[in-house]
Image 1: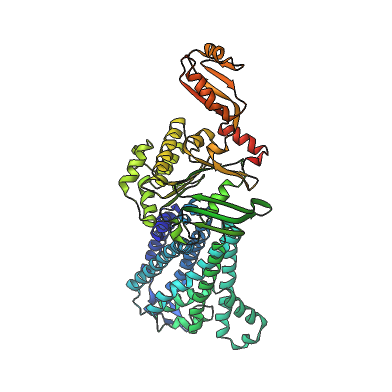
Image 2 (image 1 turned 60 degrees about the vertical axis):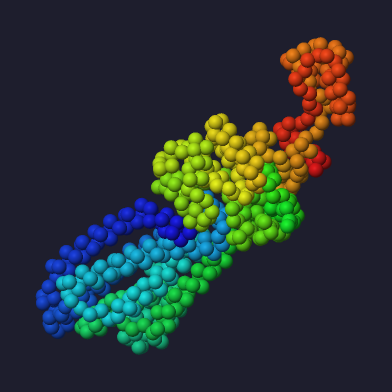
Length: 276
Length: 300
């Protein structure tokens, strides 16, 4: 059943569009970094930038763009899979076959996650590889980046799947986009406050912490970035102030995965009681 | 070993304010039975079918399919369902759809599907994309997909929908063949002529309640006459001294009760007038349908 869902997913025109856009992005990125010269860059007191600094800058900027693309793909695919299958009457065909509702639900919903993950790994991976050609660097932790990707995307995926069953496709997409933007903003606030202890006392900081706990969409993304960004970059400290990089405690990396699992099972409970 | 294929006990189903299946809806369908579910639009026929397959969750009551609840995937082994409305993916060919279904069903052979598609006269469409087919062609493919091989039970919701007369005839022959092979057939159709030809049993649903469930023969009421097919209806009328009506090559002879049929048959045989057939004039399925739907629910 999972293969069927994946086959349906792979035939979507949306994927072709995203694929072409991704290719365009990679080519642009390639051109951009190929023409960059770290020696011409100056940091703080006029010290020339190193390759690690160039890589850090490139990956930080690219990461923001990539995250929007991969997030967008996850939201659009995740929000449409169940409503589209139900509307087309195919869900009743799958559910009338000798397989459990859990299998139907899990197979159907995992397909968009897998597609998003493939895109995520390809885009981030190729970006890092292209970067390393022109500005050789040592990533902080590739395993962290690799393992954080499913945690990051599963939070968005589980949320949008659940909401697509409650409010429908388009409202689910909009709600998720808005809340993600909000969560990213609050996440940046939390990161920013790491360098400014005085902010910890503010109500805004408390609100930001609570939001990142309730909507942990960006924690995983942050750890993907953390894993990919180069070690020993002077830019790290400078940019940490703006919400890039920084350290995340382990529980903040694991927590979005647990949160996604809970939402996935709440979604399953709803699906179980749904008339198909 | 029980002979029951489907048991529905005391279920009810409501969609918002609409009571799709009334309180305590119960029905039992034996293995090998070919049952037509009949009723007006919105009577609850499709809901019943979907509830049995576990697609609609009843508010109360229990359902079992071969002794297992619909939530158990084992209950749907060798069970096929053709919904009234299905939109195939446009990119897929019938063969790709079949393979997708078989990834889960794991009970058929591709050759059986090809054979069934040929029976439905759509064998030449197997490699064409479903998105490039007409509605009727897609329906033929859908019928072939859901009836190929040797299913134990088939649920067909308006299988002739969108088909031309030739396609409808093919559906009838496939359903009749399945019934002959001992497959349990549950058919939801508004084409009473189709139903009459392929089903032995009928269940009438009115406003979500089961108002009649019996063999078609037993549901059909005697209409107070016998129909005699003869090339000499006028002579027959004279010999029998019948007040009946001559209609073409038939004589409709009034009978006070079914009991008089044997005596009449004997009389005709001894009359010396040529005849080709004699039968009790009973209600057609359309007559039964109209009678029951008009509120005459006493036949059950």
